[in-house]
Image (cartoon, rainbow, N blue to C red):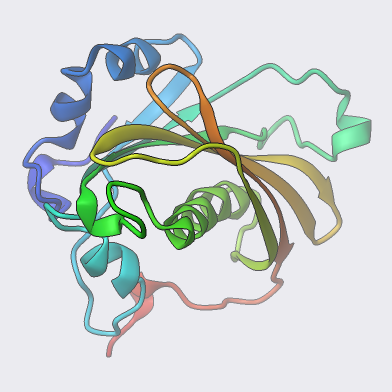
Length: 204
């Protein structure tokens, strides 16, 4: 299942076809663990919510294409230890991003803050799958392992690994085409028990 190519507003007209044309990306997308592939909507909205991702990081010079896909990975620990609900399993959220030099800090090298923004988005989306009315980022710790040289295509992962009441423990990573881990992250998200409002509800 995927979004119509005309609805996403990304610089690349067909992001799914774009990544399927890259052999290492196509191999991951064809894996049996993948349960859904989507194209994130990058259309600006009047309220300015998510403007950093929808506009600043949605250009031919920054992030020219991205897609997300969800993977079901059989748990290695019992639900009694992780808090996982079999009816709503901890899916791994993966994102392919095609980067250009507009995300750089040093020459030809992505800014460290870029890692944080993307990991917060990917890990936060994984957390929201476990929260009917949403979850807020309480903490996010990023450890940098290797520089991210641009331009390049990267894989970003995020997954809830433990649920304790309103607390969601989430892990994430950045990886290159060879499987090298460029950064890892640990985060805490807090489930809210009220309607915090979604951009789709905005009338601004």
